Amino acid sequence: MNTSSESELYGAPRTDVSQDQGSFRIHFNFPGRNHPDHDDHGYGPLAAVVESFMDPETLISMHPHRNDEIVSWVPSGVMRHNDREENALVTDADHLLVMNSGSGFWHEERTLADDPPLRMLQIFVRPHSLDLTPEIQHGPVPDPVANEWRHLFGPDGSDAPFFVRNDVNFYDARLEEGASVALPEIEGWDTYFYVFEGAVDANNVSFGEAESGLLVGDDSLTVTAREQTVLVAFLVNPDAPITRRGTIGR
Image 1: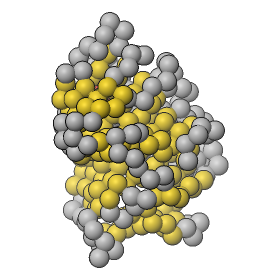
Image 2 (image 1 turned 90 degrees about the vertical axis):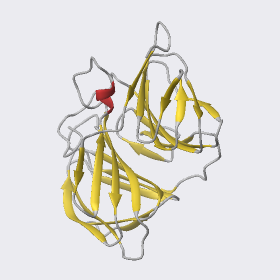
Image 3 (image 1 turned 30 degrees about the vertical axis):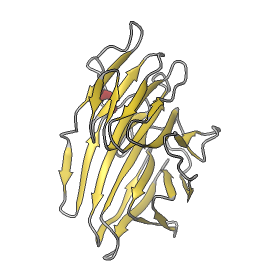
Image 4 (image 1 turned 180 degrees about the vertical axis):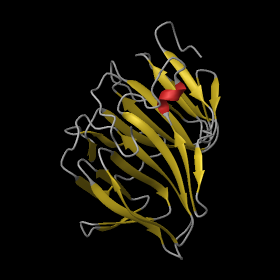
């Protein structure tokens, strides 16, 4: 799917890579697989975008991560986090959780019996260096504004409220039917987008729920919502130095 002589838009259908553990179900989206000539399942520092479902009263018991930057984005529902650092954190539509696991971090996730069913994205970013100091970030996010991008995390030192330790910026948008937005852009960086709910058109191509696109090149691209839509986008520096020894984001 050509956007111009300089840029290329690669679409991908709903992933078929999934695991069903009963009350916990996960679907792995690998942005590098959008590109037919790319030999890495990740795309530069963006390793994977994992759609996770947890039923009420589900426990993912204490487990380790290492050399992953893990972001939990919960547009609705509640995800409860506990860890060996005695953090007890609740992530929902008003909060974001970032685990910069570095040299090692243990945590568990759960839902309570009276919690609603949970559907979220867990985003795995490859850090620029191995065995960095473990950190955890948790806090409120700015209120969304209809039909505008909201910048939620970026590289350390960016103007986003949360950071990861490599060149990835993350945005979300809630689009009304018929609304259009241009994909975020930085010269020399590429953009991966994922339709969490709804459907959009981009460059005369339709993308439905759980479908994704990868825009390679510096041309601008506008997406238009065919219905009420929740859309996420990642600006990625494809030439950033990366590590490949994460627990998940290899």
